[in-house]
Image (cartoon, rainbow, N blue to C red):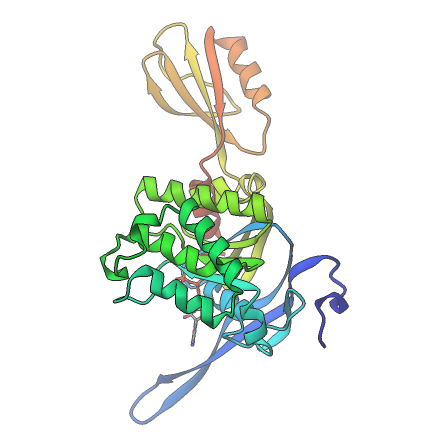
Amino acid sequence: MADGDSMGCGDGFIVLEGVEKVFEVRRKAGFLRRERRAVRAVDSISFSVARGEMVGYIGPNGAGKSTTVKMLTGILTPSAGRLRVAGIDPSRERGRLAHRIGVVFGQRTTLWWDLPLIDSYRLAHRMYRIPDARYRENLDRLVELLELGSLLDVPVRQLSLGQRMRGDIAAALLHDPEVLYLDEPTIGLDVVSKAKVRGFLRELNAERGTTVLLTTHDLQDIEQLCSRVMVIDHGRLVYDGALAGLHEVGEGERTLVVDLERESPPVEVASARVVRVEGPRQWLAFPAGRSAAAVVAELAARYPLVDLSVREPDIEAVIAKMYAEKAVS
Ligand SMILES: Nc1ncnc2c1ncn2[C@@H]1O[C@H](COP(=O)(O)OP(=O)(O)OP(=O)(O)O)[C@@H](O)[C@H]1O
């Protein structure tokens, strides 16, 4: 089959239907005896990403994120299911797909370590057969946006982690890919470098409509860049939706911060529990799915309130809880 549209998935640009990847691993099981075991790294995953979407793909270590990305780039062939990126079957037409996608691995560089940065770009120019005018235009734009001007003649090994990451991102975008896979793009970066990378990605998505699939352990990346998030755990997709909806899935707690008229012992209400007291200020936790109005009404009826505010659950806490629950079940 040549075309992704024939899969009946509408305008999906990245489409997975029941995709699986099973690895055969051999283990020593005694003297001269080896045992074969199947590891189901990706277990019947289906999703569809529209052109121009920016999606977070998250999950604990060993969940199957890298395996999914490797199948999307064509490095690995799925054991079952169907997969298309821009209408292309990645493992069958890896070369053709390479012109349409860009890949950045935070922990691995694709740049030539001992050569000046610009040499890696010249190589990409030839490798991807980018027309000269387009190469120049893209290079100028990326150098400006990623602030690489003073770094082009510096050997890659002398670059800081943040500089190298920006260099890698530029390398992945010189050929104008429609899709960008980012694997931990801000790992190990300082706050300023993280902000630069995130700012650039937002601009890229807004200006060029580049579709972005972002794998990260840094949930601020997701909060600042993605309106949709997919959570994978033990090879299965356990959540696909808005970031805000994760609060409900994780059944996190919201916090009501109240200022009483004067310092007092922890307040007593049925709908919430006090988790902290500091002078006249008290913090009350209540289930995220419940309305704050009931808690406020109960409090106001019994205590003199000066001020109050509601804090949403910390997304990291919600996801940590979600993983913990999965591990127990
Ligand atoms: N080539 C391989 N051979 C055998 N097992 C593998 C192979 N690659 C991955 N696995 C196994 O598949 C599962 C998923 O691994 P994967 O690297 O996709 O997880 P991940 O979500 O990317 O994890 P991390 O966040 O640690 O990078 C793990 O149990 C891993 O040990």
